[in-house]
Length: 443
Image 1: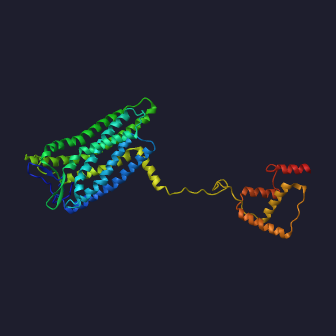
Image 2: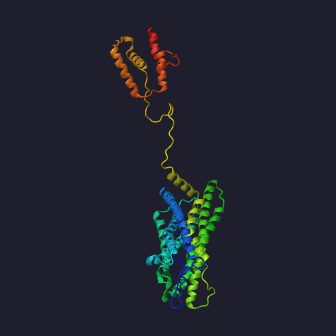
Image 3: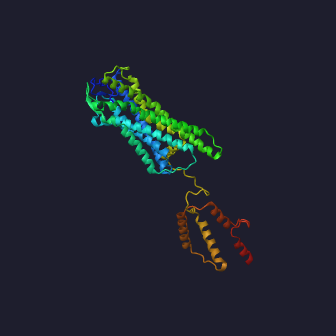
């Protein structure tokens, strides 16, 4: 609904039948070229950073809920981030596009819904903060109490928050129209004569119901919750719970204060413009005859949109749970494809669970080994026939082939057979003493 223009001045009909206005007369002192580049660039930066931060926070909250950490407070924080994401995705790009043109070229549908959608998201955020303050106070009052809440109850709470936000902002959608201006179409809010009395009451009640009452309610309950956290428990086991409650209260209180401060300039501009339009229509003498200053209007819009970037940053820096979630998400994204270092192979650090394969040996050692095994199994009862020279060479070739095929022998096994062949074993280290005992007994 808002267009950055030097020729799109605030439209005020001097008749008593209706009053109309364009919310932002942003081109009074600065060069149009500077504004049409600077403001969309700032909005683009806010949009990119805000979408990334809010999306990350929502992923962490969804992951915690999937692990069984479902709570009303976390669900309300998720709803707050969701509303911030909607503002950044579906409001900031259209607002930046409208600022870069001198006329409204986004169509009738965007004109009807743009400002209503923004106001509905901001109202939903305000109501969410109020409900969150009440839930925080109930948790801090009795932190050891196990509260089980079902997903259906949470969805009902969120549904009524959004329903209330959409209903209370209907006039922004109902009275928004396209109108021919000096240099083209402009998107303005025109109130017909039959709705003028209603609109006069609405412009006074709307700021109270959407900004003043919810945030005052939230600040009151956060103050009570913080006072409850200051009471030290006599039991040592409850001190950790109190520290956690204090940190949670501080984080949610910071979200409320940030919203109250960053949203306040926009409400000043909102009331100022509507006061001018209403009094000009009635023909009354105005105490303030000039529109809001350009820098105030620009700053109010940028601060309102920057709130969607500040909220996830507050949650990140003041919540230990979210910091751990951010670290875990970063590790999963960066270390997913990195493999662990391979251990060095050795006799006490095998590379696999498979049994080691023997090392190739000389044919003479293999022949001695086989002869020793055969002699142990057969004993000295029968003499072995000597093999012919041709058969011996074939046996040596076959033994070499088998030894090369088998692989590697452990050093301990090789030393064992070497000692047996050379006779260097002592009685203490003899692994098969029964052989020597039998031989000595026969002798």
